[in-house]
Length: 150
Image 1 (cartoon, rainbow, N blue to C red):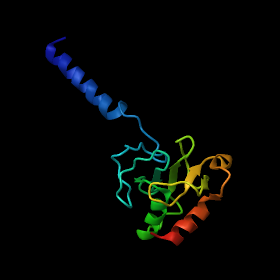
Image 2 (image 1 turned 90 degrees about the vertical axis):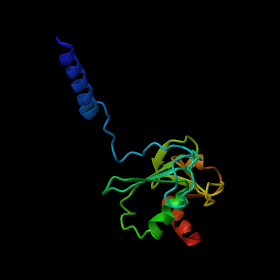
Image 3 (image 1 turned 135 degrees about the horizontal axis):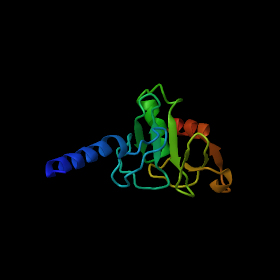
């Protein structure tokens, strides 16, 4: 095999792998990786740095992800931007105990922690993990954040 053929074969193989087989296809519904201290909150433009309060909102129509530093910012962003797909959005939030992504709509929220933007809601997958204080669901978090409205 000549050098030219070998070089051509190697370049073609590399191009083929890069184009068709080298990149893992991710499920758009799953949360994206947060680049801590570099990704910015979509609403307040603060760097997302607190690992147990990050939020990832997914637009089901466009599959675009929007990141937030506090659940309060995510909720107010829907209202302020007059977005009509909020009820269909996939909303991921970090679990306050494990730091894992959980469904924000199924989470339980404690109301007694200091959060990045001061809304005070920390999400938990299990109600028992939220502590012995007041524990509320996502709909109540939405009502309270919109009432505060800052």
